[in-house]
Image 1 (cartoon, rainbow, N blue to C red):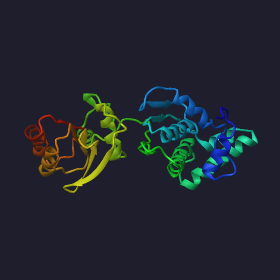
Image 2 (cartoon, one colour):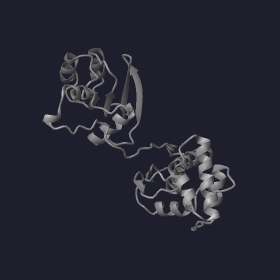
Image 3 (cartoon, rainbow, N blue to C red):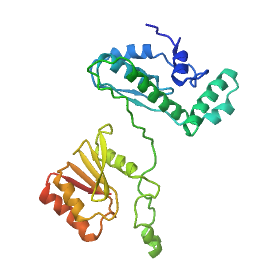
Image 4 (spheres, rainbow, N blue to C red):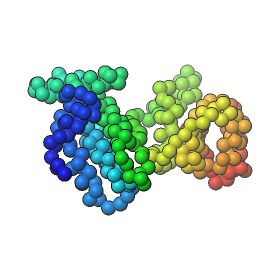
Length: 275
């Protein structure tokens, strides 16, 4: 097995179907596979703090496909601006690499960040792996989730009591920032409750509202507005471990007060939360 970077660039060019690799000095996945295989266990997580081209993710998926194990990966990478990098470098070879990466971002209609190219490499590698021969016990999981560090979803309030006016109170009616999605709120709740971020999530429409189910019953979340007792009762019947709503999402104050009582009667073990 080749343990150097020799051939890694050729593989990357083939993967992206380009004349020039979008990564400089990509790591050889054969070497990384060897390193991972030295670790005991079947379902541990490999963390790469400097993901770059995400060779570690590629190697791990390939190793899983060969021995049928269920290892996971976490890739961490700053959103390096490729346009700024192109202006900064002087080497003609480096410029070709960056231009190749930018061309991929353009073809995907994505911002010109290294992270976008890295994510696309994982997608393409996963597709290529599934096209080949796989271990019969492998779950064929090549999916991944993309999370980024951001500010809180909750509106910032820094007023002292003597600064509060009637007008400022109106601004506090909705305590969630207007640019945040339901998925943003869901992952904040998962983090707050310490729920595994890799658990399967499905979305259903119940009583005309969008409801998220995390690992079926580990957590149920609905962040729609005008939630009524009919929806609350239907969710309580499912007896989830946890359920969460928007604090201002209830049809009325009476519904909000009754929500906790309904769960106490129908599913007393469910932990109820409003954000």
